[in-house]
Amino acid sequence: MTTSARPQLVKALAVAGAAGVAMSGCGLAARQARADVISAALARTTATGQVSGVLYTAVVPLPPRRPAPPGPGRIAAAQAGPLPFTIDLSSGRSAVSGTPGGPAQLIFSGNWMYERRPANPSAGAAALLASTGAAPSNIPLLKAAAVPAGPGAGAGGAGSAPTAPTGYQAVSVQSRPWLALDYGALSSRNRTGEAGSLAISPTLVLRLASGVLTGSVEPISSDRSAGASGRALRALVPPGTTAYRANFGLDKAEKGLTDAQKQAVAKIMTANAVPGSTPVFPGAVWLGPGGTLGGLSVVMTQRLDPDTQALLIVSLVIGSSAGAASVPPPAPGPQQVVTVSSLGDLIHEVAP
Image 1: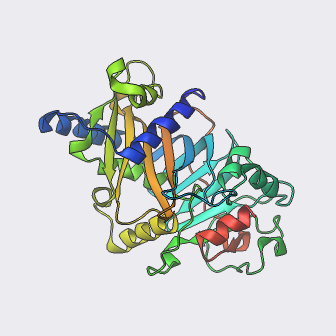
Image 2 (image 1 turned 135 degrees about the horizontal axis):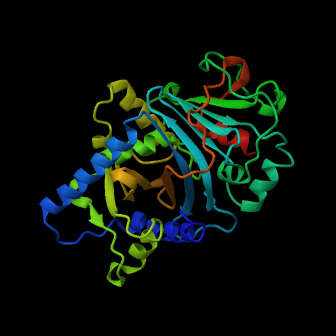
């Protein structure tokens, strides 16, 4: 994905997310064949158990239904990428780095999310957040690759670790360079979500490709009749690459998961302000060499209230040489983390 193509992607997928993916009158057999091609490409890509490339993300606030009060909105427009990512399907770990060859900024392991703490929050994170003029988000930090020079991730799970009731400044960044959140420990009754940050693992985004809905698959044409959104999506992929717009069903993507794993996914979506009543996401896929999956873009609507909504767009460009590690680093050990109790706490702690 070129830098010039990325703003076009944001615009095109924002239209798709707000208005739905337009369907033409093609036969069901043709759509089934296209869905089968996508499924086969995903199977080839994941056969080795490891997937890597670069990630792009963008947040597009939607216009409120009613006039908004003056001042910055509750969700900030933001975008970042290319961010190297690595997925290890056998261990359930994935990681996102800020720069090619740089240390991981985000690590996802099972139900746990870890975010590296800024080395100098007062001069770094606060300034970055002030420049957005809106609510806290970790995307400006990812974009700036604001990683500290401290201990890296170590072996072992999160286990028990001290919480940060009065802010992470009370605990040394050098001794505990990570914030940690256990999505699985969140209450299923909790309906409070955070919008505008990248806090959904690349593994879950990739899994959504397995939920492609047969009736939704349409080719992204290269001719002018495809419209502005189709041409923008087409700009993402090399000439001659097969690309499709499609909808992805969360229920279908969860096939094979245990009830506990499905509950964890539901908690992740709720924490990220993605309504459970709309488990279908528009997006696009394109094929790579040898019938593999070349890339995937997914649009999720985040909703804080009827007048405060945004589109979270996550794109995985698979196989791109961007210095991604071959295997995600181990999850930080208990002595390296400060554990928080909600996604809101994590975002506000890393981006005060």
